[in-house]
Image (cartoon, rainbow, N blue to C red; front, side, top):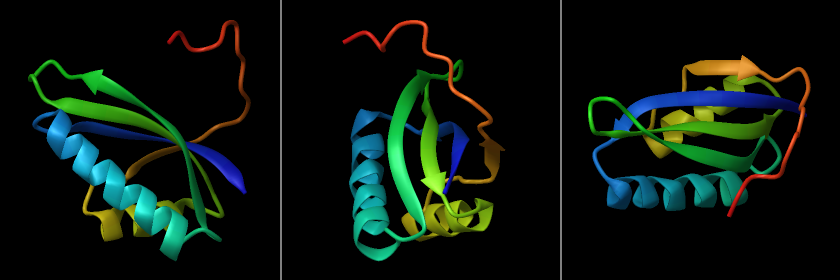
Length: 94
């Protein structure tokens, strides 16, 4: 599998909407598409328009699998960038 970053700008009005989508995303990824996509982590972004966006890290067989997953969940999924390498200077803070 290849590592990808997906940018989902201003996709949610609030934390409750985001959490509901995250539950659906995890369920579909884990139960229906586990051989094609694997959600690693997401960074929640406070967008300039007051909404929430995310940058998500996934492993996937290809970009099509990521688009299919996003479509099944009902969230944006077209801004996909393959990750070439990871550089960790410090672990994410708690």
